[in-house]
Amino acid sequence: FRHGDRTPVRTYKNDKYQESTWEKYGGFGQITQTGMRRHFEYGKFLRQQYDQFLNETYNRNRVLVRSSDFDRTIMSAESLLAGLYPPVNYQVWNPDIKWQPIAVHTTEAKYDMLFFTNNCSRLEQLKRQVESTDEYKRLNNQYEVGFLFFDLEPII
Image (cartoon, rainbow, N blue to C red; front, side, top):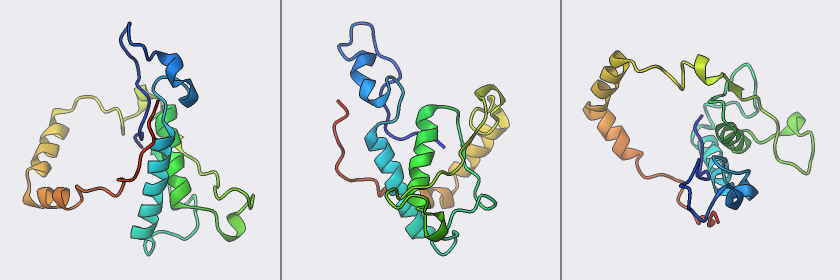
């Protein structure tokens, strides 16, 4: 998983918006409420698009979620999962909260071969090869316009 809208990771020395400006989001490099909302909406979109393919209820034996080991990416995954797998029937543990905990697995960056691969010239060559195909270009253009265009809150 990658992150949604986030606060700056750092800023320049004389910027009037230092880390204290971003405290309501947890400081530098944290996901914003806009980022959470977008991922939640994305989860609902994926549920709608793939409802016939996905289980109605979350099943840990059928779903494995991996995230890089940063708060913003873990929280992005959790937000998407809240939209993708709202609790139903026996999974409702609190009727006031339409959410259920779903495990998000991480690996320390130095051991993470999924998100932090070393520079691999063969992998880069294969990616360029795929990206140059007509099918890739067609699909990329087809899905270029996203579903995430809705009113956004200002982040400051």
